[in-house]
Length: 238
Image (cartoon, rainbow, N blue to C red; front, side, top):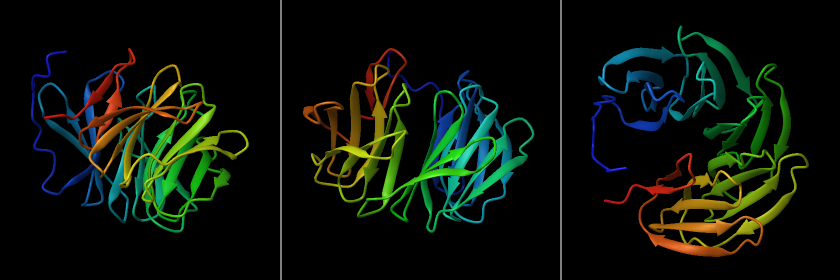
């Protein structure tokens, strides 16, 4: 609410590529250039654990909605699922031909979605590790990927400045946004699945209507954006 800095974590001796927070707000997860995942206590800033197992940069980390597992995507072309308490790697998903740049999970907890520098998106069964579908049709690297809360859409931000909206069930591309003039690096979606918010290297944030494919607002800002549980837009404006 106030925007006040309440704590600063000296997260890594290496650069952190991705951070996430557990649903209960107690722990921060970081993925970094030293191929590891680290866990930190939000209140104290205390370092708690390091997960090792990737053979490449950890580009993306998220937690499941129940807070029990971490999902990571790496430059070693794999996705891993980790037990957040023990640090044990429970499963490794292989199938991409280049670095995994972004991972997300559906709200029902059944599917992992991954985006890669091999220009594809893959849907995985979280229990079996089986790849259920592959969406192609991109002309450049996939940087960011999200699903709509109603699990109808997969939204993808790419290095070719475009945002594509796919039907989750069919894999059909139903909309393409070409509003940015720089690589699309970050995406979020409102809780009602109506609006996409995108951050880009063109130094703008755009709010896009998912059904009409129109840009309804542009904010001159930097790349990272998100939406809180009440549907308010949050940017990293300084």
